Image (cartoon, rainbow, N blue to C red; front, side, top):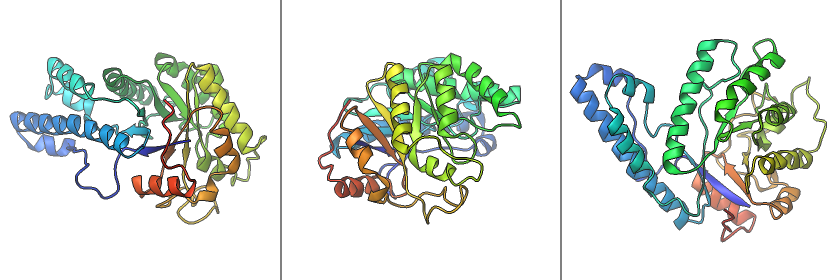
Amino acid sequence: MNLGLCCLLHNNKEYKFRTYTKARLERLTFDEARANVHEVVWHNTEMLGRFFDYCRENNIPSYRLSSDLIPHFKYITERGLVTKPELQTFLRAFGSHDTSGVCLSMHPGQHVSIGSNKPEVIANSKEDLRYHKLLQDAIGFKEMNIHGGGAYGDKPAAKERWIESAAEFKDYLTIENDELTYSIDDCLEIAEAAGIPVTFDLHHHRCHQLKEDYTPQKTEEEYYRLARQTWIDSGRDYQRMHISTPRDTYTTPAKSRPHHEYITPTDIPVWLQEAAKEFPLHIDVEAKAKEKAIFQLSEDLDLHPQKVLV
């Protein structure tokens, strides 16, 4: 069982990516805005390498990259704040770091909805995925996880749009179940049609079960194994899933969504600990305490030192 860090460290000022807003850039002259963008992106290229090193040095075998390595990518490239040759230089810098021993992924934001009923939303979503693909190609991995999105009053039609839109990114995409709209059943159905893996989020599944109109047809372990098969069928030699603990407790789907600082050890069932021995499993630890939650969970489950299975 390999525990993964999501994007940042907990309250650590030495490990920070930088950003800028479009509003700030628009208040600056072109040359000032250009200088600001270049300064931030160069900082982020260096910081990414530091995160890879941190993961290796601390026996963290998985890392989820931030989506904001090049903030407001479309805006800065369309304005010419970064030229095509300069972009290639940035990409080479992002790809120059040693990624050995660290299984990488990305998680584009909730605004990405390739099953939307609005063509412009799908078009913008695809542009964002192409940005993620550009970074992944430069760094040397293929895994970007997104949600199903909305049902838009007609979930079967939304699923069809999702599957059609996913074709361009088949080798990169994974789909994750959510708390309210797309159950693990929905995601398994979409994944089979699209030929992509399912990232099983156990916390989301437990939230989704609180819906009055949803009754799971299988056990957690059965869903886990079905999700595993999608990774195998996609030619992957590992499986990824997400784990988190609710901030308070499980009450309603919406109220149970916020994450706790740490992971309660009993939220990791014994069957999962045993199943992880059968096929390499990478678990993104979605907890507000970040690396501290990983270290604590490793100790609770007696995972020290974590064994890298990549």
